[in-house]
Image (cartoon, rainbow, N blue to C red; front, side):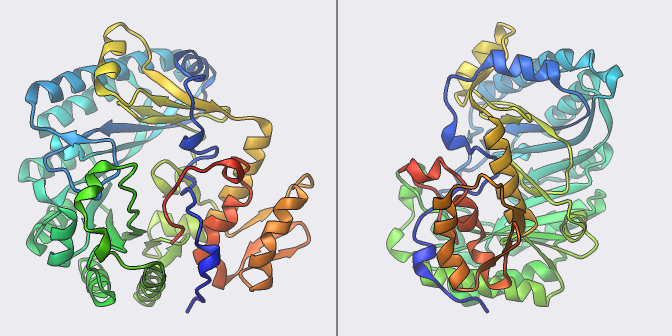
Length: 441
């Protein structure tokens, strides 16, 4: 289906869930910036709550998470999260009369179901009490291995419409190689529980490029996911970066598929899911035609935020919890990554923001180009686009991966796997940074 151009995939690039990316965050941005951004906020808001705990830590995982094997640590964290909800809620309260409203609430981690269902209900109560909720869309990431019946009752009572299961692979030998063993029966039970609970959009996270994974293993996992009725499928390439994520040192790197094999897996996965009736959303997401994500892709309203591709149109996302990131039009702000320092700041009534980056007018313009390429497959080029950027486009243009018509750069069908590489050409920070990111495929 796609032609493999190894030279265009040789340089690791960001996933561009924001621009500038988190690689540009510094401590020059902090609580004062967060305070000012909250005071200026109006209109629709999305909330993201980070639960940095899992019952078991998978070796591949790059999330900011820890085992929930110390009850007092988990309780202390939740107490601080409640404080942050109240603190941020107070700062937004005066804006509620001016039309400020929360339209989306997402829970991620770690695994939100690493906490007790009762603790989750308390978080919902805290949000209802302190935030200007306006019939929001609720979504949650879940670990199918620890999804119990009481969770089903709670999800139904809250009205969770969207859920994402960390499936990764159905191949038992691949599960063992990445430290995430979960029998097929666990996935089936989770799907049945979530459907009974009223979840109408169910995502499966799957991975290719895993140790010992064959093309047949991937095809079998995709076939099983389609059979189980996943409304969305995110097919990510495993990023092996043990120098950044020490727990990945437990994975046998000698058994990883090479770049050419990864490319073939991505291409085969794309072809398999499109044949099954899914709409491709960007390069590595897929959704059933009637799912809101596919509708956004088809009507040109698809966006990108820290959860990846989304149909959420809110211009502001507020992150709550240690390491979570808030996105405002003029600034990106990240909470302290250290859970202990996060708790200490909140115990003093201080916003726990500790890093970020201010967006210049030029950053905002470049961000529109990058988002357009990744979400709509095209972007209007600014008249001030540097000649060197146009020069770097040449390899993509001459190989039929992209074309320029008038002032618009279009990604052609064969160029879809190279979308992130194309986007990176408009990122001036990447041209001068040695920081390593994940493989473009």
